[in-house]
Image 1 (tube, rainbow, N blue to C red):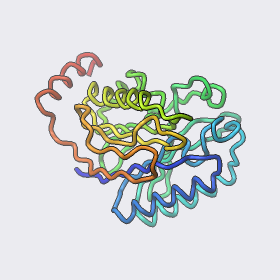
Image 2: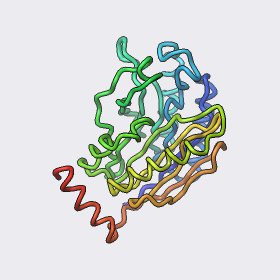
Image 3: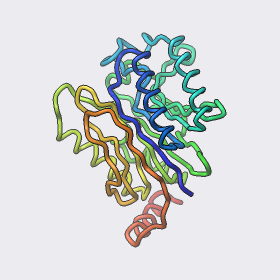
Length: 259
């Protein structure tokens, strides 16, 4: 079963209005390319605290809700699933969230669990699985720092996800090629050890230190956008049969995870 997926990287900032304009540009471009699922970076709508905004509590949630309503309209208009990074408030708790908006205007959320540093200052640890199904394809979602911990992806392996998606806000004030290479290696390793296609999407400003790309079940790069430039990645997902090496890794992973 095929699924055309897009990943849109842009310079996430402090203004919900400006971020929404970038999201709208991405959706309209994706619609022209018949994208079925479009993904955006971590905190793409709100900005990431404290780099872009003072704190999670500083978000204008009325303005954010208005942006959601517009995205819901576009999702329905273009028959497109949209996965966008945002901040969710529930009572007095704030979550670093990946929100999936469906063409029928229903929403599902995944809340980041690996919190450290600024995340701990702003967010509550999530308790959701981060597994969505689109057109019969089971997709796992993780957020940024979670890529450093294989346990979060072993959970997805046990659930038989066919594709895993990671939303990043990983940027630096100076050009850090070594960090970019390190984060890319984490993504590729998660793909290899779980024999699962893996996609990532990141912000681009000031300097992008994690890729927007897609990697196959053996960690090979299928497609990767140029750093630090707003752009749309297009990927036609097809879950092809395992090759010899992938069959071997899957058999060992089955034993290790008790499948």
